[in-house]
Length: 590
Figure (cartoon, rainbow, N blue to C red):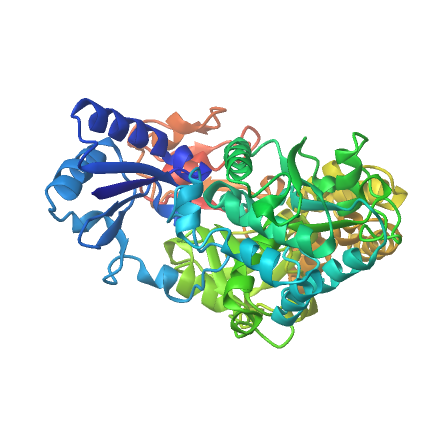
């Protein structure tokens, strides 16, 4: 039977996949095609820039993925491709005969994303058909807890939540902590702007995360666990609930799992969206029903965690690696990467890049390779300027460091951090002062307020940055920003405060000239900061078409038809609409 898979991740649904799915459902049902066509949902394969995606798998083993599918394309894909075997090659974005955007996948190694976009995330049978829960059976009957921990240690897997702490060591600490009750927590509180790695894994392959959690629980001796997922991920939550119920029904969760004597119960805790709850101690407070605020460490969660009991916390990507490592061996995992950073890393490519989406690449690949070979370079052929890594807790890595390898230690040397895996790409039109202000606006608003320097220091820094972008900055503001940054980093209790100044410090380090241009010349080199921009009309290019005047929201442009127009800068709000719509490039931005 031929099969049609519709990509129903959040990215696909937002692009119109839900309409495509409902249309195909109705056609198959009304035309009674159930004996010829098997219709299934799947997750995101990573090609978010091509959504909605529809894959056709024919009986002869061929498989083709079609991109940007609307209802008209869906009709032809159903009747012409799936039923009649005709070609619609002009819509193909990927197939196994090396057609389409093959370079997007050519440098990827898919371990965490091994099933995303390939299986139905709401079918435990699909997961089992792809070696699902085999790793759990293996450890329950063939491994002791310490052998599981040793395997993870040997693999070199480091926590993918941002800190990069060795996963096996964390598990060992929890295993060695005395206590009758221990807990496992999966941190799915993904709050970085531009990051959607955890969401895509939970939507596309929730059972792999559950299986990783179960293996960890067996290894450390825990019998209860939580997946802490932000409530803004309804699709991920819904599929997690389905997966947990299926695992319970099949005996992979609950009492006496697979008649092994091992018992484990798993619950979902929906977070309210506080960025600080990504910090493990604040997260535990939230699960306990209190306000999510960090506490002093030590003691670390492995010793005294949830409700005072030993607790192991890893993020979604970390757990999703574990079943693959058990089945394929630690040596195969560690063959990827560098000496101190093993395996692969999932990144969410966003910003001014041609192929935005989700990618999984081996550690050691360079930033340049990700941006140009995987991401397809920058939109409109613009020049690469910088990439923000690690979200608001990370930093901006400039184009001159594009040969930096993806390695925890190498990224830290730049002043940024690996983080959970967000990569926001910026081009020549990005203002780095404005970028720093954007990320600091986020961290300042998300500060829980417990630490004085984080609560007030970030506010003072934001005020200074705002002043600079409005043309009212002073040269001494640069030294003040550095001084405040150092105090906030050294005096804050948790990772949010300790890393909040990173975007400012890295932009000052690599783009100080832009700060000085804003302050001394009262000019935004990128033409982004509205208070420092003026627009004028080139009389030699203006043809008096009136398009600019018709689009000006404040009537700041005057002129007769076929006569040169003028801009009243007292009225102009520097929205840039005239600049964008002018057909003759007669509007000059200064």
